[in-house]
Amino acid sequence: MTFGKISILVFIHLLRKGLDGSEYLDLPSIDLGEIMKIASVHGLSAIAFDGLEKALDCHPGWRNEVPTLLFLQWYGQCVLQTSLLKKRWSADCALSSLLDEHGIEAVVLKGRSIAQYYPIPEHRYSCDLDLFVAGDDWERACKILEAKGIRLEREVYKEVEFIFEGVYVELHRYITPVRGNKTLLRFERYLRNVLIDSPKTYFEGTKLVCPPLRFIVMLYIEHALGDLLHGKLTLKHVVDWVVLRKQEIDRAEIEARCKDFGFYRFLMLIDSLADVVEGKMELASLAPSHREVMDSFFVIPSSDEKGMESWFARRVSLFFDIIRNRRYYSRFGYCSMERFLLSAVWAHFFDKEVVLQEEQSITFK
Image (cartoon, rainbow, N blue to C red; front, side):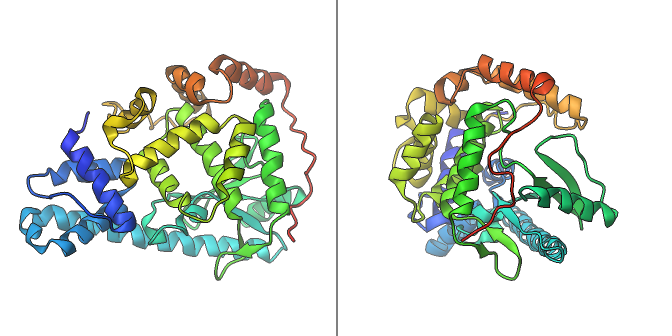
């Protein structure tokens, strides 16, 4: 399924207006149903609807051009999303209290850490909670959860997965997939040092640690690059970067660290895609390799293989995703696809132990 060019352009303008209220093009004769589909596929329904409402407020005459039923359906989706996210945050706070009773603090990865910088945090869609607990506290946290009757899935070495009050949670002992990957092992140490060297702050009303902005930005870049290489990058990643790069970040420091870890070419890619969303660059002006990534956001496969739930099925699917995206490794990655796969296979069978210099609990200034 491929979306129409006009719908794509209007959708990008709606995102732009939803994020910063910038001027908007004409609404008449658009396929609002198709635009809703694009928004839903990318988890951006609420942001795009914010843009639509702002556009209609600026041009009340356009309301007659918007089908009432579609408008109400879209509004209903946004209300439901906001309600669900508030309920999930309530569960997150309850989990925070449980861990805090035992002197365990968890750092929020991605999700809420990024959402806090959005105009309306609840309008950034997220379906799970990622937490990081370092050192021996991670094992203690697992035992506490199991003592409460919570079933932990231990299929992945770097985390356990479980459901807490209806919320899917990943409790990380490692922030990144470090095993067998020298680049990510160095990056893991870097991220932990950023936490250690930073003042400690909490999300309001919780004992969930809010990481510093530099940590959030660098983890976002590494994670988004990984999603690109595994065929999972979406326009929501680009919108996240539009929001994050507007914050008071040390751009020179970010670029230096990206060059150090091999993320710089991806930084240039995500910058150019964000420029399009912000209206700083025309879609047609993107470099061919960057345009290919942007165009991929608007082609939806006809078959959906997400129903495969077993660990083995997910591993097989990931393997073929990597093969399909081999060109992205050479264009934007920090190593070749072949090297990445060989390292992953070697680590799985022969190098299962991860050795970090900082295995103690993370402490803050």
